[in-house]
Length: 294
Image (cartoon, rainbow, N blue to C red; front, side):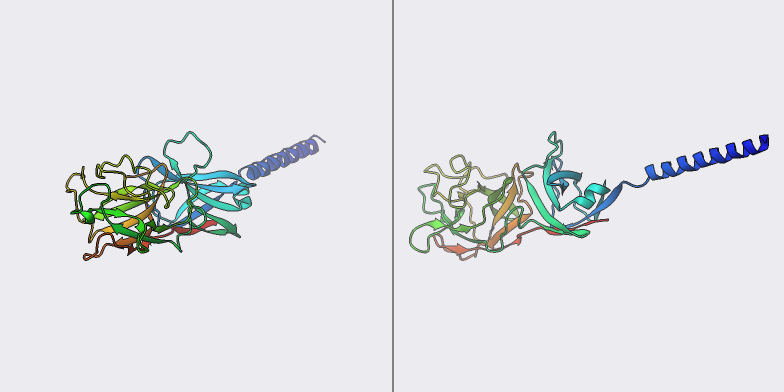
């Protein structure tokens, strides 16, 4: 009888141990899955900013992690239930030290999931530049000297006899601004930032490069007449230089042009001043890629 009792006691203990082991196995089952990014066209943001991925779950953003390297593919571990429920992936630009747990206004990529993947691009989240056009003239309207007209660039079209806007660009989403550039001997010099191509630059009244006779026409542009950067001399000659319109994050990550450059043009060496010149498509009108969950 005693032997039988001991047998059932051992059997019961074994059952309890097996049950506990099964419970432990269930508790340690993986709760995260992989999210892999394959993105093209991104550039390093420097030390002050990082990229941060987000998935939209039940209408709310959930961070998938930050990164600064622009070498891909990159894989992140994300909660499985949230990842499986996600409808959209968004990539934003965030301060490296960021007290705000929500996404910044500056979002550069987005796309909806279809099954296990999402094709993402900047067209809808920043702006679609496929139909953008640009026209500029060489002139220096901020001084009284007519001998250095090739030292200024203004994004206007005077081919009809009166000045009209020279840039046809889409309205940008929050977190972005346009910026004009003249690239002289490989060095980009800003013409100023703007949001509305029908209005003057944000620094029209405060530019250190313009002349002293006025602020110029009410369109984006710049006269390079004084206070030249080190190694340069103003007035200059923009013929042979490259004129660029870029799209910049706001706040900006760098004093140099950002990766999005929808319009660009090399000024002909025989270009005439005060004459409308058409721009061409820039080197990077969008960035894109794919996101995979598994």
